[in-house]
View 1 (cartoon, rainbow, N blue to C red):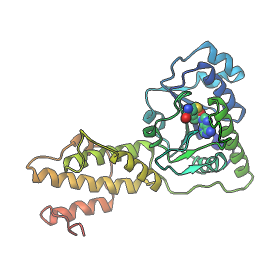
View 2: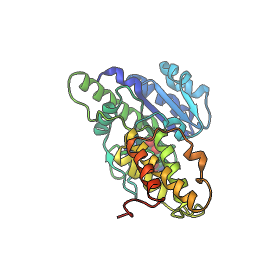
View 3: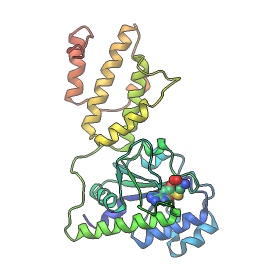
View 4: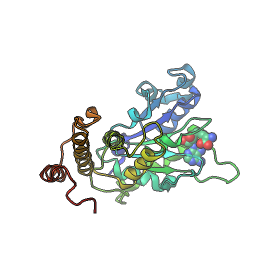
Length: 286
Ligand code: SAH
């Protein structure tokens, strides 16, 4: 681990409304050696005010990626921290900047990771935070917790740099060697799960409630790796095949089922067991 891992750390701003803040964020990043900025639907960009506030960091603005939604910003990331000034009613695992930075750097060797910042007025929505593994909160005075956007980026970027320098000097970053699934792979699993739940009548699509959100949180907490995603998708595919057979038709949501994924041995075994048993679950769900 080294300063080089900083190149894998992406700063994502969701719908920033003030171009001046975007420029100030670029400057905050560059002072700490971060270079990758992604903007999700910025209100005004590019903009002279952003360039002026970036000062000598305007190169980050020229290279910034501008995308339409958060999933596009995070697709290849394997660890995502969402920042918020507020404690949330639903529970996310919460970290302070120092621990968050160590987690991020621990995962950043050879794979993109991201830290997501919210709108100046309203922050991040709960469903945006669903896509984050951890909620990062900068401890503040209890009377006023809301930092300016660029100030928040500066604090987090500083800790990320500290974590990179410390680990370059031999401290072990937090993290794990497993290859965890990317945000896009999880998205595929979630869509597959949703389609299957609708097919078998477990989920009413007109009243989805919190099922999918809860599953995002569950899967993010579990930090599923690729082969685990494939096992689950193999199982879902088998469920859809049986459900389709019982209804005398092909599997529902076949566009989702047809997604590329290589069933692992466990996934394949599930399919074999089902067909060998007239389509009934072998263990009867016990
Ligand atoms: N009223 C908003 C504040 C938005 S401030 C809210 O309640 O969330 C804009 C962004 O700066 C936030 O979305 C977050 O990304 C970051 N930020 C501000 N204060 C923060 C804090 N104390 N901890 C972590 N992030 C913070």
